[in-house]
Length: 180
Image 1 (spheres, rainbow, N blue to C red):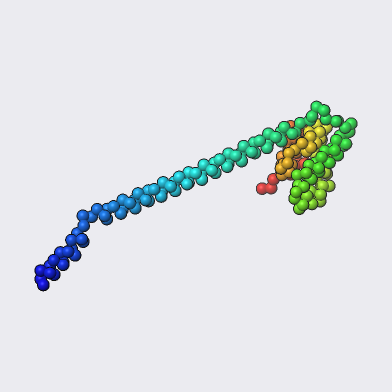
Image 2 (cartoon, rainbow, N blue to C red):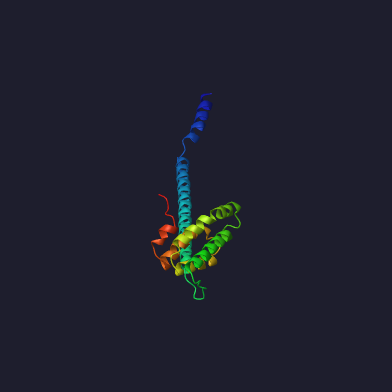
């Protein structure tokens, strides 16, 4: 019986005394897996950063193109019909502004209602800042030819036309400053 129990204990102890390679392999596998996950995470972060930078660059370019387009709109066309009186030119410009806003917000009934509601005030502000024939004709040209989507840029259009064609002091009368 002693021999049997001794052989049994030897058989049980032999598998327990391993060379240790299996325990070392697991940490290497885990370390490799962790390094692979970290590399994948770093790659995802880099991709997101590049996407953000591309988006910011696209927005900046779109803004530059919008500003350039507004500057191109704020000119007095050579073939522009010049009214004899400044008041008539300013009235025509005010009507062009209202039509511009109606075109821009035709698909949005709530904003269109606001345009109609504020039309008298818009007209009064425009006439107040309409100081020269060039400003009136330039604004009319800009409002008549502004592309779709420029409704939110109305103040920029007015400021650009005043800067290019008129007196900078008139801008304060027409274009309210931004709060803050």
